Length: 108
Image (cartoon, rainbow, N blue to C red; front, side):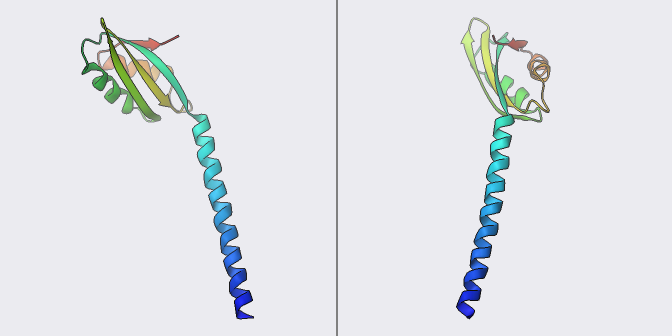
């Protein structure tokens, strides 16, 4: 009788864990689906250190989750930004790079 009771408790525990895990996975998938990635053309880059400054400026924005940037040469570079569009607008991104000394625009 005691074994059956413990088995039932264990099954109940597994059910709760699976429900919570499913909820967590659903909220994580929803969060990932809400993120957006854009590429900015960035002007006035002159060396391989410039992308570091651009990345730092963009990472300071709440809602930005990932940034990569590269200097292409001839004063041109790019930044790829993953962000939450519910809290961040493209203008926020371009303003941040401009404040860091690197004007940018959405790459078409």
